[in-house]
Amino acid sequence: MEMKEIQDKIYEYLEQMKGKKKLKEKDVIKKIVGDFPELDKDVVKKALREMINVGKLMYSYGGGASSVEIPSEEYLREKGMI
Image (cartoon, rainbow, N blue to C red; front, top):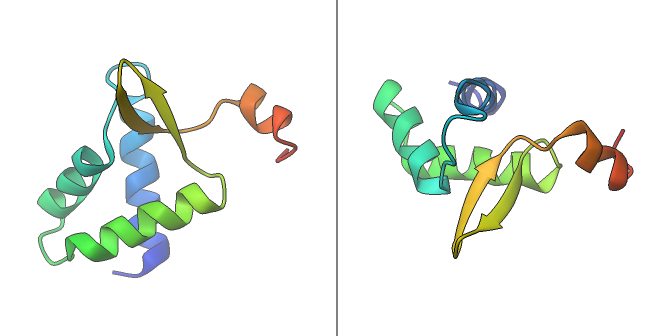
């Protein structure tokens, strides 16, 4: 599976979970590797990190824990990304 396909699966999963549950980075990796056992967790982690680096995803912090989520349009406007 190509990196773009992995990133699409990650984004799709985070979209499904948006507003339902805050997901930690390891939760996302575990879910994707569980659905696609042929993938190595390091490859999934790299795909996730690339998405965070370009602003497609972001870390958020609350209650002493970090989670990964899709940034809101307001956040993207504030950062000048759209």
